[in-house]
Length: 185
Image (cartoon, rainbow, N blue to C red; front, side, top):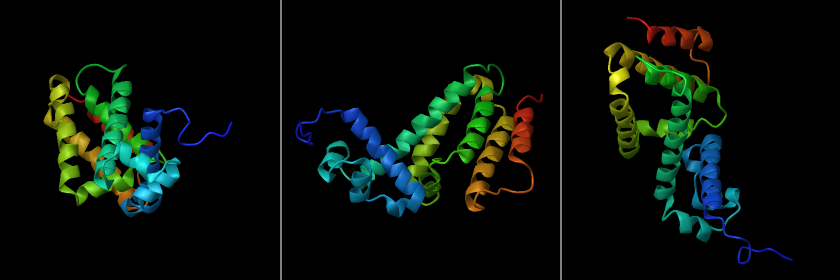
């Protein structure tokens, strides 16, 4: 039997995920300019019409990719926090996930760095982080923990700007030092 787009089983969630993963991969390889409707559709193995079935336009696709990245960040944070309780637990998870992100091949750097120039993406990030901070206000409202999170952000940004080399201190040592700072009184 010859399977075509017309008679293959419909799996909308798998197609949507394939489109998102294709867009992330293209952004990593070529920057945001690499995310074209045709390139994403080709990479995911669907037609442009199939892409438009899931995303109304390129901006909707980019927004969905950003949401996908935030969902992955949420999952990582929740996983890391599952065994950690008490003062600073969210900040420790944030530090570890930031360092893990820097070491992953698909860290979403191209899309994440676009927050610098895209006010809508900055606002979405700010809304996401604000919601997490409200959720963890009981354990992570201390200003010292805010400084630790900013240091983790700075580390990530330095890795992006310096092609993976943020400085002379080993990443493991810096991460350990930031984690230790979350436990100080």
